[in-house]
Image (cartoon, rainbow, N blue to C red; front, side):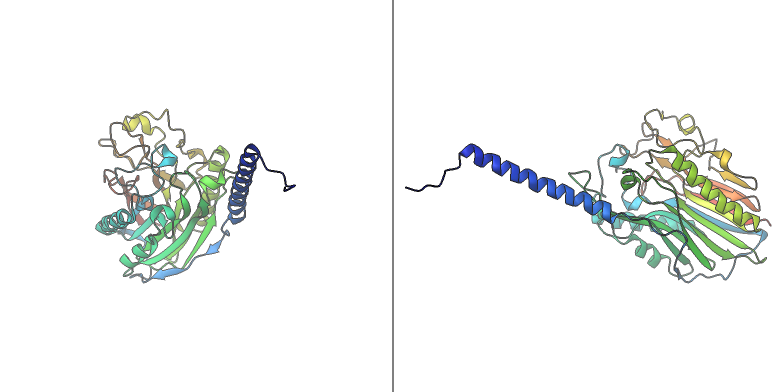
Length: 369
């Protein structure tokens, strides 16, 4: 007879459960460790590579030389008018498919080219992201605009694989902001914005703006600033610090006599009362607070595009497919411009959000001196 003791079925089941729990703890712990160790901030004052081939060596000063600029957050080519995003209360964390991304990118680039602008400020351009099926949107844009434009790209965020939402994880997010200029960009620098240091940083990710220098015929420089400020911050002081840093940069350049235009996605209500203007209540949407205009110093002015006779929003909240009667609408895309730049027009282009949760914003200006 064997002296070994038999393990009861109950104890065997308990052992298996404990082993499974231990494996789960190790997997979760390993993943948390991976995310924490992978997190990094991109260096501030990073000099960016200038590519492309601009057709002009400089821009002209004076009232007779008018230029066009188009600003557009393209929403990583996922946001057709039927798309809703989980961070906004919607359904999806990824684009519908790789084919949908490619089709939408073609439409976006056709739309951009139709504006025939001298400058483009483009945000949320993915280059190797799970959510956009690793379509290199930066390459597509650069290939389309390779003739006649200098190109500068600043990485806004480079996130490790986020296993959330669990049914369709966001995965790796790599996106940035692209500046295209028909005149030579002599130098461009990426500036890292203040962000949260709590665990919320893994959802709001890194943030930046780029500062591109373009020579002007009168010996000064046109400073083009492309920006994408924080969207999901839980710390209101971060917004103030980001805006203050931007104002400091702009004021420093303006004090040198340069022409300064900052454009992009501010993720704040630039009109201050968008719910009243567009007729849809914003009670349930606290993320877009009014822009703190009191932080804008003398010599600079906020340009929030608005046609009072027929107002068009620059952004929709993507908690559901586009419906002008029910979607919360606001204007968060616009410009801050120095007073030596004369603004001729500033308007939102109504695409009915066919390609992005943002509409393009068009600016016509001259360098007044």
